Image 1 (cartoon, one colour):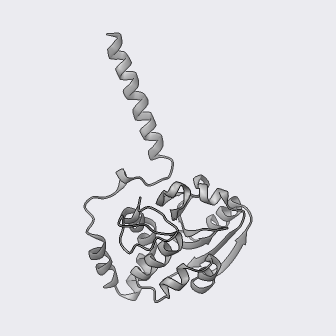
Image 2 (cartoon, rainbow, N blue to C red):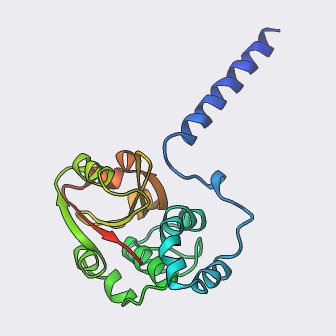
Image 3 (cartoon, rainbow, N blue to C red):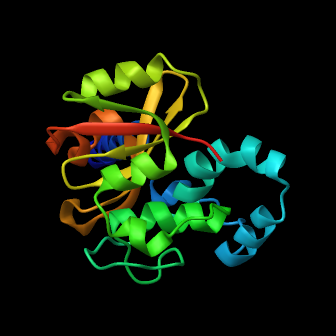
Length: 204
């Protein structure tokens, strides 16, 4: 009988641990929708949208669709993959490849290889600079909801989005070559390791 209660205790602890992982703001492989069409087919359907439809859909694309498809695609400094979970993807190429797939008319390779400040100044409006992550988050929370930003760090870049009172960093993380993740900004090792923050508002 005592072994039965011990087993129940282990199961309970395991469930608690799994629940904590689901609440830490990071999208995991278990959250991926297996019914989604292949990426190339999906992008083809997106590109058929009208300009107005793309304007309205852009936030959902970056905040939901991109993490669903690209999560766990590994990072490497020279990664240039155009397809999720095939090859590797560097942080700059992750941003420009995604935007190119959506229909942005940009010099994808050139911008991916530049400092993030070049890309942000070229593609964004309302460019701001911060020295603390907390100030960056306060700025975003005082702006409109459903907005996409490009963030430039000391040596890194990615998208930032806001869901209600939560702000997320969607990027190809160099931390342990983790690759593409969507994580709460307050929990992001890459964000917390940076001493400078540049951000610009991105609209289609």
